[in-house]
Image 1 (cartoon, each protein chain N blue to C red):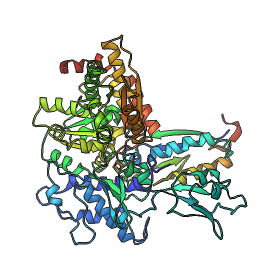
Image 2 (cartoon, chains in turn cyan, orange; image 1 turned 90 degrees about the vertical axis):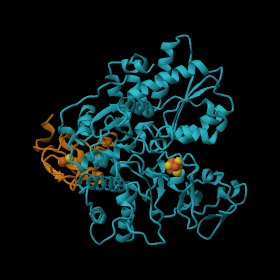
Image 3 (cartoon, rainbow over the protein chains, first blue to last red; image 1 turned 60 degrees about the vertical axis):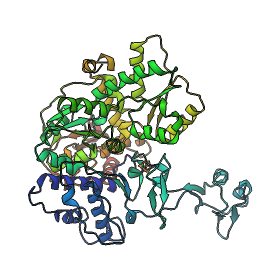
Image 4 (cartoon, helix red, strand yellow; image 1 turned 45 degrees about the vertical axis):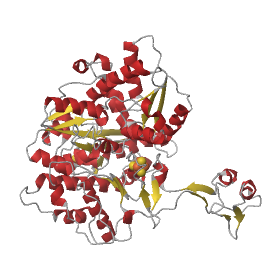
Length: 504
Length: 100
Ligand code: SF4
Ligand code: FES
């Protein structure tokens, strides 16, 4: 279990920070901004003189301040030298990209340095006569102490046999929630035993952010720059990822969300599902053309965390991962083609997309990336009551299959349907994985040559994009809303979508 | 059987502050109905922000059980109140078993 997908005090604080940052972005005097507002923010979020969650109210506020900096795209401050809290804020109060790596950050003094993965004897131990734990241990790491069994951590090889043998379930495996959530094994320790992200391995799936029970990990946000672009009069377009449906509550229908975005100052709202339709057709054609002649199999490319994970961990299979545009890139590409001077903001459930948008091939098209949670902070800052708005609509609609991209299995399904239309004779075996742990297993099968001719759908988030770290709704609810909206589309498959035609 | 009327706000502020998680928690009570001796019917409604009880977020989420209003509602408070009411479940009017 983890805190992911539950509303906890951590979720609340995170959303309050987004609201504070968005409020200042909208309300500040553009000529003479006063950043001392953000000192007050930390008192609004952590009121009073008594600590709420930790040992000290001062530490709680200090953590909020670092979160505010990150939410403005600023780097963390060092804990051992003086640097003013507001330093650099005027530099990021611009309509340009300020976000830089590292994207995912551990706030070191917020990390409780949880013990790393180990087996532990709990007080369930009754020091029984049989004590099978000692006899099953292959390396004699378990002995019986005064009150209970003791595991010698230096000897333990973590085989788990003692855990299985104990009649009282007294032995448990426990570790760091961040490290356990990270399928890329990117969580190391610093010299003080606190979590530290190995940025060479991190693919920014964001699972550690939503799994840390002490809210010690967070990513950077571009709320401030997006709002600044809107206020400076740029034409700012919102490209809404397929997982948006239902994210803002059951009363905020897709049409009302579109209206809400316009109330925030976005000039137009585009359905990224259309980009998914374009991507589907490209990947279907790629599959028909290259598998099995050039490539042993085809891996989907829409999830950037899966894509970088696959390329990093299995470089020899790199060529088999689709080279087609992701829905985000396809959408942004089309928009910039029509209006080169416009600003494109991708809004989705995803943190890895923020990293994808830094890539040289994507950066010219996607200006900023926001999550649904960050967008909610903007709605709240601007007092936009979504339920009360008039329904608006997208200029072009995505097909059922393009809308289905948001739920695990949806991408492969769309491509399979498209292949069936292009070449009815072709049979497409499919394999799917929705978590980096599953992706890892799938990649070893692929490496062993067991996926010849397959279409592999990889997604880093359990449940697919609706389970992404930047979402607001419980996953089953969100999935149901996405499916209902998908079935509502006038086009069934990606190929049937007339918006895809000019791209072919 | 008595009936409890529960209204959970799905306005922007309440949704942001987790009101849908409260809905999910209330729905989950149905699975536990037998083990917790819950005999009431729950009439669960998702309502818009009409009275601004949320005070622009400061008091969100807002939940109403029959006529009782909960500000800054948390899953634990709502669930325990529901369980309390369910124990002597007579419905709003007190007419109890004759209703529905
Ligand atoms: S890969 Fe994901 S879970 Fe792992 S460190 Fe990076 S963001 Fe965190
Ligand atoms: S948003 Fe729920 S009462 Fe206002």
